[in-house]
Amino acid sequence: MSEETQTMLLDYAIWFITYALFSALVMVTLLLAIAFLLLMDRKVWAAVQMRKGPNVVGPFGLLQSFADLLKFVFKEPVIPAGADKTVFILAPVASATFALAAWAVIPMSEGSFFGLADGRWVISDLNVGVLYLLAISSLGVYGIIMGGWASNSKYSFMGSLRSAAQMVSYEVSIGLVIITVLLCAGSLNLTEIVNAQRVGVGSSVGLPQSLLDWYWLPLFPMFVVFFISALAETNRPPFDLPEAESELVAGFMVEYSSTPYLLFMLGEYVAITTMCALTTILFLGGWLPPLDIAPLNWVPGIIWFVLKVVAVFFMFAMVKAMVPRYRYDQLMRLGWMVFLPLSLVMVVVVAGVLQYGGLV
Amino acid sequence: MIIKALFFYLFAILSVAAGAMVIIARNPVHAVLFLILTFFNAAGLFILLGAEFLALLLVIVYVGAVAVLFLFVTMMLDVDFAELKAGFIKNAPVGALVGGIVLLELAGLFLLHGFSTGAAGVTQTAMPSLGSGVDNTTALGRVLYTKYIFFFQASGLVLLVAMIGAIVLTLRHKEGVKRQSVPAQVARNPKTAVEVVEVPSGGSIIPSTEGQ
Image 1 (cartoon, each protein chain N blue to C red):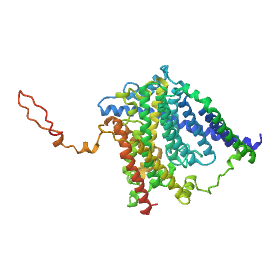
Image 2: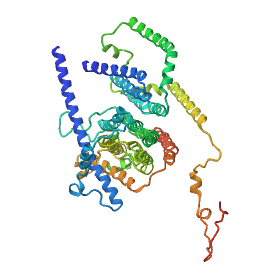
Image 3: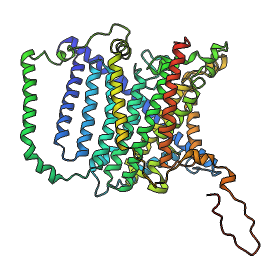
Image 4: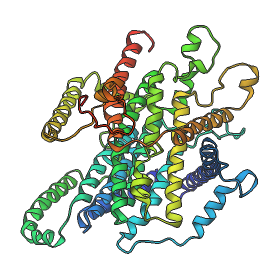
């Protein structure tokens, strides 16, 4: 082996280890955050129904998620006799892996990561970050289909069929909504999409850079469509038909127990957090402060990002607590007959306004 | 280069192996899952070529949509394995003939062009440089909407025709099936929906059928 090859391999090893460490850091932080988001979800739900929610484990029930984690891990995984074992185990793993993989391209802030020379607030700043996210989120459906089929139970199968149809339907409108944002930002790179929101409606009428510049204002109908489609895409109530308790017991995960079930739940919550982050990046200005004046723009970008993600998650939780579940045909009608035409027309309108309004 | 070559061999071997498993696997659902693995590795090869837009499009379109439909269909099928095997003997010679021809053609190509040196030769095939600062989304957009605009529109039309065809073939309005009509529901008002009835004390009322 020549000297040159050796230095190259060494460089590669260093690069690899750095990235592996960064990825591990993001994953651990994300999972910790999700433990508390899950608690928040349950607390908000409880507060709306005038209950206390989990309040026994730790102060204010803060450690509830960790208690649940331990409980799931120590239970015995039951694999049904008629199940296709490989696919049965593969399904939850695929579900969790695909959900976590999305976080590789999500920029959480800008600039150097805690002053590190080569550090950034994103693992991979892809040029086609948006497409990557679309690709990964369309893979999430496989965990559900595989799990439903491999369980060899009619309830699971019904659940997974519903879920597949639902996710494929709402992906179409999500894609079109994202296209409108891309048209405005002129880039598929998520960092550039956030930076394009520094100037917008607010600054064009002479205001300082503020939350009026972000895309939620000019693209408000798309913001609403995206939020509702995100609920449907992640199987959140009121669109939780795949696991409709009243009809299908627990839908595609009815045969799952222990760690495989935990992985499904984890995948679901990671996907929800991803959608919250995506809403933040596409419509709520990512890490930009709500008003670009002295005390607010001293706050690091990551804090604004986290606050915005938590705010969007709060809306997810409130919707879960307040809105009754849709019927299946209503869900399909909403997706195909309301959102699809609306977002299709908006793509044409936005493109037209940008082209003939001289805004490109 | 070594790393790139290693990844090339990883993706290439996996995609060929998964491709073989698609036809070897007994269970059709497993076959479709292997097909998905093949798509994935093909996407990996695209990324090695620097065509990340195509790679992600492959994942979105084929893995995210087409393969889901495949999976749907194969899951719904009630496959009789005995019947499948009965057809094997009959169809084997035709299959072998087609496979043999393709193999011969590929061998001919290899013999004509010779083996390039290692995996590096693969990246040399038909990969125009894009110029600096142009990512391949932009590059594709530039030719797709200018030079190839008519072909692009024509392919869109073909897909539209296919879509309309599928709808025409399957859309049927059956008589006597109750359907929900949202406008009719929204248009209901208290006058047509509710009726105030004086109930005589001690007596009973027969619901009127007038408003229906």
